Image (cartoon, rainbow, N blue to C red):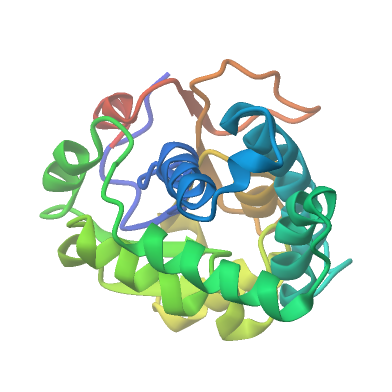
Length: 235
């Protein structure tokens, strides 16, 4: 059942893989690095390299969200994991590679299908915010270069409060610092753990972007969608 369309006033969007196509943009950057740094002499194919990088990166981000590791460990270990089989275990080399990787990502502009069309629809009706665990120096550039920035009133990052989604405190901070009422706000994101569980912990409604048709884990989100265009039927 569709709720009253005028219920919400503030919409909090996750950025990565909700609006900005993180998976494909990052994969493209990693393929450029693989070629430019001649990593093919150590790996049989880019896919082998990428398949070593990706699961480890996702595991590290989970630990980062849960405060089990810090940002520096995340940055180092996601790259050292693919460098060590090459005989490279140097911190400075990994940091240099990370800087190159992040700079490349800021120039990528691929968005999740329907992003701009949806924002054009929502912008005149709602207050729009980004709520992200991404790094401060990168997220604003990604948004500006991909055309997302004009639609958003503010970007709220986990680094602003030293707390990552899904912890309740970052949602509380976002609500307070945007003068948004909890009952008039909704979190929109693709990550079950960070966005949906986090918003439920904060007693905020949620819209789960779930194109992979994953199973909900024990609790039901307020809304589940397969594509961004379905949000127009809710809001």
